[in-house]
Structures are given as structure tokens and as C-alpha cells.
Image (cartoon, rainbow over all chains, first blue to last red):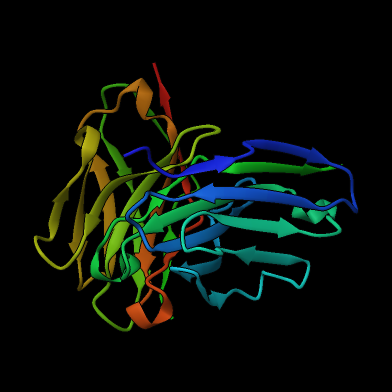
Length: 117
Length: 115
């Protein structure tokens, strides 16, 4: 069990550029979540996948954000035309199919820090 | 909708003294509740979880939490703080299965431990 891995861990980009983050979940987990965390705040839900299907998107996920999980394994989160307000840590997490609703553990990666300058 | 409120944004204790981090929840159903810890520049680690079994839940590193339905509380405790406990702690409630079973986080409590 290698845990949830995220890449890159840190990204500095200029405003207006596009960035992409990758998440590799725990191999047997078919549910994958993306969260955003800003300094001094708790993580906020962005979106989640059940296998390759994206089942829910938060209102925080503006049209500049897109997430994919093409083969139900790894996932990518792309931010187009980045803005300074996008600066945050982007966390990926995975779990078995029912998520935390039945008390299952959701496992988090170490996050990808984005700084937009 | 489900939510959690962490009553203290910052708690400071001396090493060797008890820790109490307070959390109240709001839910229209019997929730699953969790405490996660986040060390600086690190991801989130599960400390413990309540899933409608025993109301007193034991977690890692000596932490415990008690589910009190009458008070809608899920406070985190530890008898004796260690320097390595200094971190950010999040109280978390789960959404229903048909809402994605996702986690809904509180704002966090920063725990400082003085030598």
C-alpha cells in the first residue's frame, strides 16, 4: 500500500497560465475526491469520482477548473487561466465505494501547493 | 445539511498537561464523525472515527473522543500532551452516501504545546 500520491508537490505559476495536478489513489479504491485548502481554513470539497464517472462538482469548481479520471485510476485536476485567488493546496483523497458515509476511512495525499504570482 | 463547528481556533497547552479540542456537529441523521490531524506542510492523517458503535472512541497517539448525541458534541482529548502533538486538528462529519459520502471539515484548531 503506497498511499495516495500527488504530483507535483509544489507549483509556482504566473497568472493566466494553465496548471495540471495529478493524483494516484490507493490501487483498490474506486472513489476519488479533490479538495482545496487555503491558509488557516479547513479543506473544502471540490469534486469526486466513482470509478471514471464524475458524480458531483462543488460550486467552488468554476468553469476554469476541470477534473478527469479517464480509466478510473489516476485523476488530473487542471486549472486554466490561473488567478491569484487560486493559490491554495489541492488535496486528493481516495476511499472504497461508499466513501465516509458508512464510516470508511478516506485517505489523503500530501497535497499539491499552488502559488500564482 | 451537515456541518461541524470547532469552538476554538487555537489551543495552547504545556507539555504533559491534558488536551481538550472541542467540536459540535449538526446533522439530520446519525453521522459518522472523524478527527484528522495535519502537521505543517503535510497531508491529513486520520486520528480516530466514530461510526455508531462505542461512543468512546480511541485513536492513535493516545487520543480519544466521546460522541455525545444529547450535546451534539465530539470533543477530542488526550491525557498528556507531547511536543509532537503540535499541529492543526480538524473535526469532520461525513455526508450521506447519496451525497457522495464526502467529508465536511470544520475550520480547524491549531494546537500549540509549550515545553
